[in-house]
Image 1 (cartoon, rainbow, N blue to C red):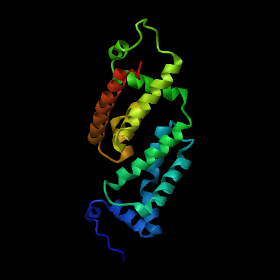
Image 2: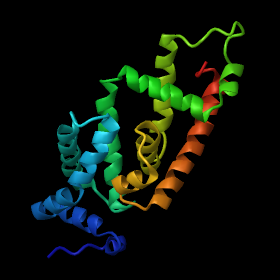
Image 3: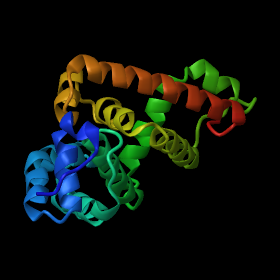
Image 4: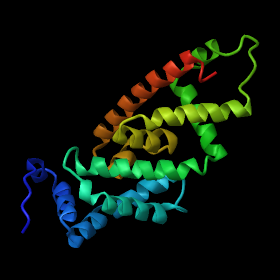
Length: 206
């Protein structure tokens, strides 16, 4: 039996399983799939706004996990490492979609985090309203700021503020407690507000 020296695996059995996958264990990989498949499919369904792409993207996530097995090292919790892959897969999928509904949601989210007064202060002096083309730019800026958040904050923000899930549902989706989910969302909002305020001051959210 292969012995692993990483001491943190004792507190993170999934990391231990991934190390076994790295060593060539197909059974360990199957166990990881069994443990996380439903949860990942649920998160992808929420992030994509429906189940149309869930199966394919879930398979893509585990394909990437398998491909990354040879370079895997124990650092953060395995679930954090895995959800980073989930976010990357979803982000790539969503780039090709860019639905109008999503653009509107991101614009509203930006205005809810950065006050209307702050936004107005940096608009043109003629007071002209935001034009459709500008909503695309706003959505792009907000998506960029969200993507700069750490993985778990990004997932929590997407689920709660973009998809409208409650703290308890977010907690269940990412495998934590409601209080921990609430804390992640609060910190994520503060970080986003700071980033978006900077974008306003630079003139990128006019």
